[in-house]
Image (cartoon, rainbow, N blue to C red; front, side, top):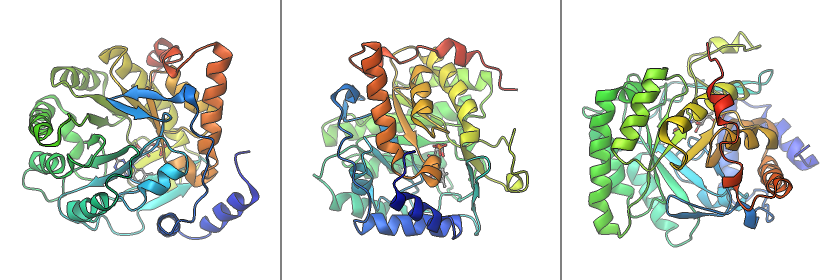
Length: 365
Ligand SMILES: Cc1cc2nc3c(=O)[nH]c(=O)nc-3n(C[C@H](O)[C@H](O)[C@H](O)COP(=O)(O)O)c2cc1C
């Protein structure tokens, strides 16, 4: 469908090796300039001014693909409207032992328990310094080291280190692979974290001459009450937006019951419904205007459109690229452009939240 013969053969070859090796090969290929360039992804109807930034199109690469900021320009060259480096922690860390990345082809899903393997702030800083001035929207997703004595201080250090280089920040408190990290989503802990992060962002804005937007990335496994608390905290602390969502701990409905037993976060098609319901509920709680990045299980032009109508302002994908390849990017954008024309809308705002009530009312039990 979205795949040329070369694309299909490349995907088949990558699926012959273990998932983490395939990812490493992909990053090296992108870093050396070997990647498909799609030039027809600048469709005027899809441009949006969001977060004070000019997004050429709404589709971004989700965090975790380019943890160390090795290939943001290749990602943008593939037609993505924005890239997100990270999650990055102050000090480098190895993450969990291998294997820690698993494909579930029968479900079109992925399970990972990487545990924030990354090269640390200094390495990402050097790479982002080196591409300074090249333009394009490149966000930085910040996290805390597993053994951090003070996790809040790690997030604050991320804001301080990258404020002059990040188009936006993502505060990731929703990875299931760092023990206790998701506890930061609880009311009191979240208040403390957001107070510190937003204060540092404001302090840095005097140095860098702009308020770098901060997005909070949440889990799809939050309770109704937990989501209400998060929405309230986001509004109270004037956080600039949400990313909904990270991977899920749920294993509901999987066909590959063997791989389903692997510990870690599940992403891809099996995440779509849960992430979209939480997105719609979050949209209703924060109101019509707060930017929300919809992510989780988008694997076709149709599911991308559903995320918009469930309340997303922007989109991100990751897992479906493993199965469908990069041709999915222009296919999604062409479809969104076509739907806008068909409905007589001049921008995505015309489609946003059209089905938010139906999605928010879906049962997740
Ligand atoms: C292998 C892998 C690694 C990931 N690493 C991160 C990460 O470091 N930080 C983060 O915020 N999200 C991370 N994610 C979550 C994705 O950014 C995204 O939220 C999730 O996969 C849902 O989108 P998808 O279904 O399109 O993959 C990772 C996902 C995968 C599959």
